[in-house]
Length: 111
Length: 115
Image (tube, rainbow over all chains, first blue to last red; front, side, top):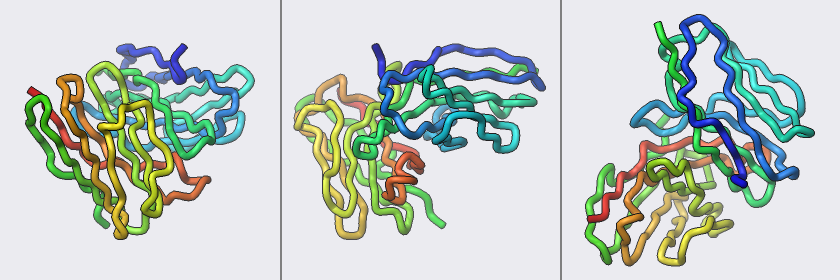
């Protein structure tokens, strides 16, 4: 079992819709969770982080964490073509600042 | 403020050679991380340096090594290059505190091609 799992996609959503990206992790001791966005040919950039169960909102982005289910998700409201990218889920199990990344979900927002 | 800078941007080597990649973190960041991004495999953690010391390493053979200098810049060395070492090598920096540990700022990467 992979430590951090994501559906590779592509996930296609129409412009203006809500995009829902999901991630599961295997280490129950994981303490902090991150979403990075990577445009094609570019390096990853941090867009959200969440440490506690529940929802965390930042503009059009909402991160959701359910530690009991070992599940973290990212919702993007009012999706725009500029949101088309690969979204990487990353988990820090608390052991030495090592972030473990999923392989990413490719999101395509279509006009 | 300058971001994380990496050099070279591209590097072509042949099997058995050595490659050296360099990274300068954001000013004020003490932690430097190296990741390998090979096609279809996602980001694989290589090494973490903080305050000049290697703090953690991923599941890579010893021919992957590096160091961090007193000015917090870092270099990654890959010895005895193999074809499967061809990948994008990403350096990231962070403040180094436990709370901010996962908030990484990435450089644009060094593309290593092994022929």
